[in-house]
Amino acid sequence: MGTDTPATGRFGEHLLRLRTGADQSQEELAHAAGVSVRALSDMERGRSRGPQRRTVTALAAALGLDAAGTEELERAASRGRPRARRAGSEPAARSYAGAGPAGEAGGKPAVGRSEGAGEAGSTAPGPAFRHTLALPRDLRDFTARGPALARLAALAEQWDPGRPPVAVVCGQPGLGKTAFAVHAAHALAPHFPDGQFHLDLRGMDLQPTPPRDALARLLRALGATDVPAGTDDRSGLLRSLLRDRRVLLVLDNAADEDQVRPLLPGEGASLTLVTSRHALAGLEAVHRTELGLLRREEAVELLTRIIGLHRVTQEAQAARDLADLCGHLPLAVRIAGQRLASRPTEHIAKLATQLAEQGSRLDTLKAGSLEIRAAFALSYRQLSPQAQTVFRRSCLAHGPDFSPQTAALLADLPTRKAAGYAEDLVDAGLLQSHPTADRYRYHDLLRLFAAAQSAEEDGPEEITAAEDRAARWTLRRATAAALHFEAEYGRPPTRVTRKATPTRPPRRSAATVPGPGWWRNGPSGSVPCATPSRPAGTARSSTRRRRCTGSPTPPWTGRCGPRCSGGPPTPPGRWAAPVRWPCS
Image 1 (cartoon, rainbow, N blue to C red):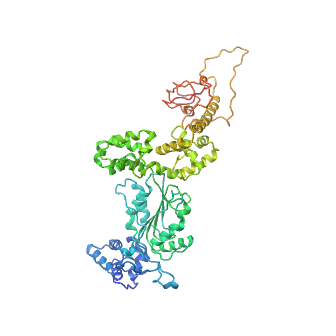
Image 2: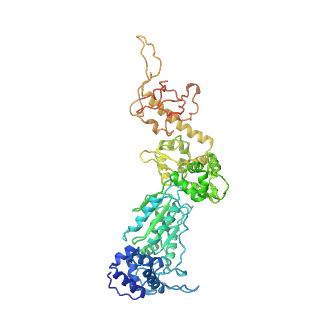
Image 3: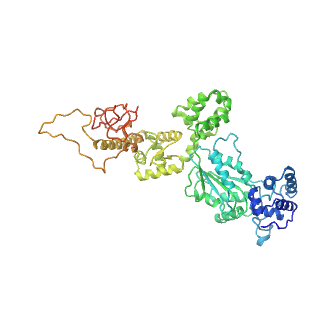
């Protein structure tokens, strides 16, 4: 597309004259202004006579115009903008992507243009170009997420028309994925002069929005007057509409990959942001942004922006404690902040004291319609019954994390199935997986939610049986490990006659004896002998508790530190389990 293209409109003539005077090609100007080459060509040829004000501003900046030059270019554009139609009048529809006016191309119905829906600058603000998928309002107290926002900004600037970028924002419930996507969309709006669209896919509902219905809403928002009946036809029409447009799509709260795929552009310069509590691991060729917890100072900053600097300054330590009790989870911090904001005279320390009670912490984290328990329940009810069992029973494990064997014992499932359900929980954002070991852990608030669900759905007999299964497994492992070593260690010397022969327990084979580090893989989540559980029927007279005051000596050689009297290593300050060790 050269610069000798005839311009038929006054704005087009003026724009062409400015571009050639700046010695820029259409490709260079389009890239600098953030519009498509096709849209710029249509403006210069007079097909798009009244671009939006922000498009004109972007073009003026790319051309290096001063204030007077920008104002002159804006006046030329304003003359070509359509005036607001009266109610009931027919829209002056045009077809998309190079098709002629309504009635051309074989008499097929045309596709109209709505706000941000056609080539850049094809319509103007007003009733003619409003649509129903406008972005939600941005939160002025949005905090942190700077690196993630910077990556999205780089993605928007370094676009390839042949590969429209798709960014998936995922993470556990309460991380603020929707708030992040909406904030990013508002910040990136100048890069997408053809419009920004937000569509809630209702992935957490019992019946998420079908792709066919989602496509219909998108097509109507883009100005389509004749929407095909089939899902494939609607998806193809959407890709055709977006081919020559630079728009930003926010597909919020997606359920799975099959719901998202038909909604993605095939080519062009559009950017799509997809948010989901699920990892959407099967979605191909996408950029992934996995949000994490806030840092402590970021959580306090969010609280400050909600309730004000004065209150946080007066109770700085209480504010830090409050952030810790919320687990640095953005939704929890926001709920606490909203509650304090609605009670201007209430002290932060009072709320922190209430949250310190673990049994009522989830109930305390409630402010109007915002409730942390409800946010977790949305994900929990999406799980299968077996996955729900693994989720709520695994909280019975002691220690900061647990293994698949632990989950299997507590849920009374085969290890392989329990491991599969644990991975499903990771994909659903309800568990966190260790980066190198085959272990899992909860967020603090999710552990409390799992414990509440276990108390509600599992009876005392089921909980006791689950704990006994884990404890018996622990004792078997501990006994096998202890018998592998010198049985006489720590005992007084025994007098042996010449005819008598000391007896020792048989050595276990290498296949049945746990190796070094066996205590790290036990169902207790830390040292197996530190579990407080005791299998039913274990005689108290045959056991004793021993407090370990020494430090473990790695690698374990069958002994604790020099101040301990035997047995596997126990962290300082922990009570050893009621186990009779061969060496004691």
